[in-house]
Image (cartoon, rainbow, N blue to C red):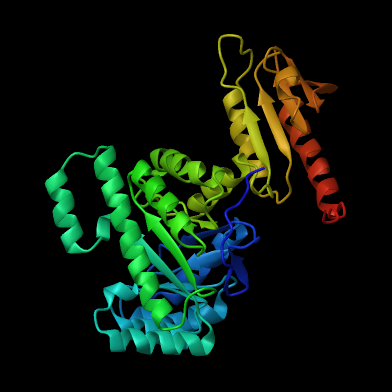
Amino acid sequence: MVARRKSIPVNVGGVVIGGAAPIAVQTMTKTDTRDVKATLRQIHELKEVGCEIVRPAVPDREAAEALKEIVKGSPLPVIADIHYDHTLALLAIEAGVACLRLNPGNIPDRDKVIKVVTAAKERQIPFRIGVNAGSLPEEVHKSMREDHAIDRDNREQTADRMVEVALGHCKILEELDYGPGFIKVSLKSTDVWTNIMANRKFAAARAYPIHLGVTESGPVEAGSIRSAVGMGILLSEGIGDTIRVSLATSDPREEVRVAHEILKTLAIRNESATLVACPTCGRLEYDMVPMVKAVEAHIARLKVPITVAVMGCVVNGPAEARHADIGVTGGRGKGVIFKRGKLYKTVAQEELLAVLLAEIDVIAAERASAPAPLPL
């Protein structure tokens, strides 16, 4: 198991980030925040697929005002994503948000920062300080443009600057006596190695909980891979207390699914079904791909840890899927259902999928009704 970095826990609307708490999954809504009904509908959809914290963008006053109804109707803690305008932060606090995504360094007037922090203190609302490599201060960008090439030295220099900016923003809050217990930090870059370097450096510098993400990671396929590599390396080192996968997709549920898959793959969290399938080759004797898709769709709704295998032949069948709770291997006119690598029953090919899905439901029901294990 991965030894987690020790961090100071922060309470975000009942979801604890850091400390010994599970790594939380969050994402942003993709609706127009001013459209309360659409935003709440999307938040409810996100909760159904395992999202635990949600962050709407707050670009203007109308969006900030809409937060009042969104917070009331949201089944998840709401973080207000705000940049530059301190009045939007004040309106978000009045709306009852659980956290502010705000860089105090983006508000040059210290009196305005004090107003926001004072209001946040009254309601014990924490801050998420977010530093993106693409939106560092202009003097940093100017120097980066002069460097041109993305090599290790350039990455290290960018990572150092990201940490410097993050620590500077932390210091503003610390000087206002609003530090440990009320600050979490993110340092994100599209470049995976810059991302990794920056988070490693910050993790060594402060004990604040860290929100991981690879920003602007790209479309679903490429972005999922980039996110898995960029966050997976850090998570395997015990760095990271909450994560968000950022994908160019209209449906943020895809981001939540990928985030949970990353955590599940690293055995950090396992609260849903897992599908394994062989890659197929010339030994394949049945049309396996439709079965994989059907099983994937069926188990997507399950909220219990169960592993299902869909294999293509006797070579990649029960012997190579012994870890699966249940699986199937097809063939010419018939197939076999196996449990934990042992033959369970032989079934006619046309009945194979239906029998497998029924058996999956039986195991899932047994898991769901089983008493929770006692804490060690």
